[in-house]
Image (tube, rainbow, N blue to C red; front, side, top):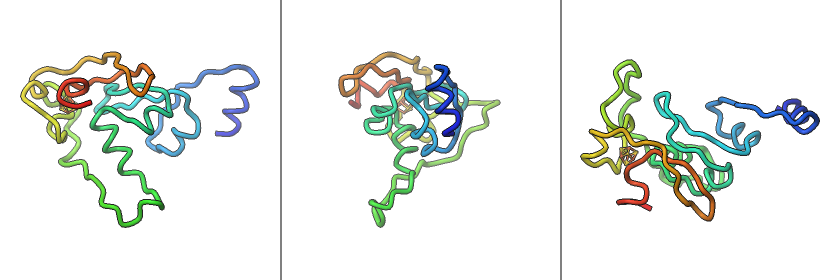
Length: 134
Ligand code: SF4
């Protein structure tokens, strides 16, 4: 990772870095995209995404990161199982697991749209953001 970062500084490389390891993602990235079932659901600058996530999946994902400062703190669990990507659910593919799902979520797949978050423009695919949730 450090070699990659050195090369980035020396010759101005841009990387598309894909990982499940959020610590590594935090270490190496400037902008972070979160995918669920093969689709981008949130895209934001690293600091905004890690500190002020908007998409429910991003929020639950970040809440699952072990944190020594939060020993004993109850965690929110993502309910249900990951659906079969060959037969994804209708509408928002996260709706069977989302604590904020409403009828529209079961019918219409939300498009990525730009919204303001803590003074930064981010992109998020969620009907609830800006409507029935911040
Ligand atoms: S669109 Fe609906 S189901 Fe999908 S993440 Fe947003 S609130 Fe949850």
